[in-house]
Length: 328
Image (cartoon, rainbow, N blue to C red):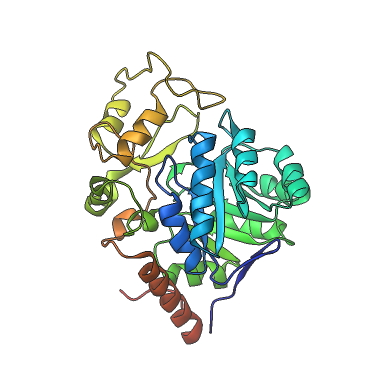
């Protein structure tokens, strides 16, 4: 049995897989375009970027593929609306947002005919997003990397949200690492598609430093921890010396803000500087956001091969019907 397509507004992805948006400069056009070429939805991480850089990267992605290109922009960003409008003007196909809740974004999406997908972690917000006009809803559970809105695992969080969301696609995100899990969450739990991010860091096309990818490859389960963020939400990351220093309560306060990026920031460190350091492969100073199950991934593959594996694994489950446990 073939995987179903994923329809969001007037857009149709032949493979029901969204590549999660990762900032700063982790998921760029270099990654998003190949994902879109494979039939998924490629996502540029727009948070923390200057508007001109975001515009250029969206145009670059759009010129490289006929597939679907989206941008992920955190509502927590000070220039949220500027980033949204720049994305629309640059021809982006879909806007994904979370880390806060904007009502106005749905009006903007309707005005410019750009579908909006909202990331939520509760039935209440999911129901509200659908009522206000979300074209799709992404359920992000505690297994996800980066900023987290819940401490509930995906298989606990998803069912009550599935109960209240009836008229738009509902996409599962958090800790999915292979096609067997993709088939399980779609067939058994009723997801219309999945979103994965960490697996795509370990792709040839993701243009972070080699040291960043090696840190993922070297990670054991105990190396993936929760840490604090100036955004005011917990985040899941690798336990690097920087994260260990935070846990010990060392003073890492930002003395002078170089990046006026967040609407609300407690300045106990500069998240922009730390994320940029990780992209450059600085294992001592960087903040390496990662999903809970990244330790299970042990190879770097081309995007096309990642898709091939997910599709073949998921479709093998559909074909065998109806057992969902992957081979040991």
